[in-house]
Image 1: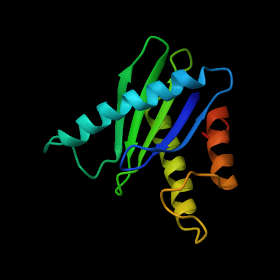
Image 2 (image 1 turned 120 degrees about the vertical axis):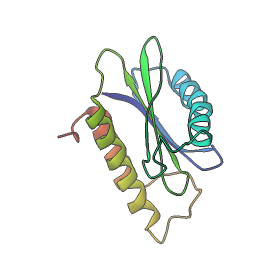
Image 3 (image 1 turned 135 degrees about the horizontal axis):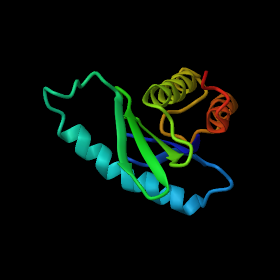
Image 4 (image 1 turned 30 degrees about the vertical axis):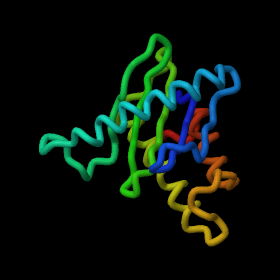
Length: 139
């Protein structure tokens, strides 16, 4: 189950960070920002072995308590999911979580009243993320 989901701009500023109330919010922010370095390293070292069309970066790094996964859209929007090590996601489930967050972000950007780069406050997007963090949207 995801304990934190974050969406970052191509300039690495946060558009949206949601964390489980039972978790330390400051620690989640720290983990999201430390994962940026790993994402940038993976993007810069893209070789022929790594398909540049594959948006899913996989597990960025493990921690004592969490596993951090990354995803980058074609427009360089970064999505980070932090999950508890006690209740890990399977690789296919992690891809599905990223796909649903990405779809929610696409729907948000298609809204003519949303200005790209603004903090995300869209209720449909928030509902999508909340359901993913509760583990109800993964089927």
